[in-house]
Length: 406
Image 1 (cartoon, one colour):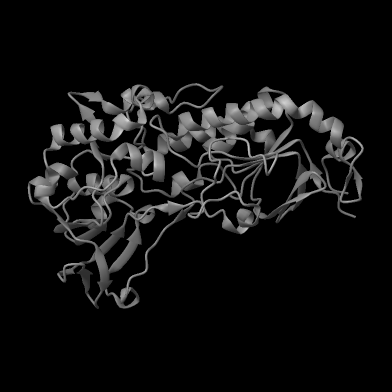
Image 2 (image 1 turned 180 degrees about the horizontal axis):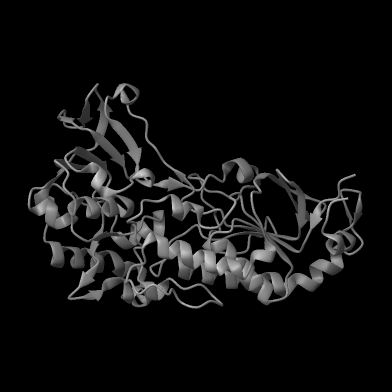
């Protein structure tokens, strides 16, 4: 007979949000196990292109109960983020179970049952922290399969020098698209077209040598109604009317898009200058492909070597949680930052919504919220389950004490 592992809390995902949640739970004396599908932490970061940098200031890239980043860069490079998360994981290594993929989640006898490739786990509280950007979202256009060039997602961008001398179409100019465009502006591609359906909300990375992102705490205090006109004015003040250069405006302002749809600002570090200089050209949205061409909504055809899709990501939560009524129509959690769900007690989500200060800051806010709620009801949870059978096999407290397979 196999008895499930038992602990008070299970965290799915050893990314920055998952590890922060585990740290806050442990600080409050809550037994916790972290399940990580990869064989090491920070794998999604390691997979990104080597010149990627955070779009948040290093001031906001610090996790609770840990020192700040040791790198001195204003915006941390990819490898510095990997090192920081790896160092943070050292303090949790006794609680992280690597190479463990979750296959199913269900509610059973008042507990959450988690089936994995390495057996089953039971817990009173389940924290889901698999990441907002888990799976790249790739569109499918007519004729795409016969296109003679290369079509990739920004997740696979690689070294910018690989695109020197090539004709590039970048689909989308949001956060990830602007990152690619900033890098290409410092490289030597032959042509770059920016295909946009809706223009981005774009701000400068720095103003007179001062990082605009350092003002995130201030922006977070402004009333919501004031954000769109404020950011719209800032964009116009620093860049002028970008519609003159083909970069249209979205019907929602930058503040509304972030708070409503989770779409963060694009930060300029060179691509606007390239657009104004004619090195880059904004064009209408892509509608299809020919053998060697990219077809636009206005009928124009571009002869391109590479198409880079800056079309976002999705969290890929439907397979595990679609039956619980915890996701919205786009597959994102209804309670994305550690809020309680009265219909699913003990189920928590963290790391699924952006804030002005960035995901590191949001991880701390969510983790403290979750840990405080769990700790407040932990004694009651244990008392209630003390004599309860887990799937008819053994009392929960016995399983908790063993925490092993038999």
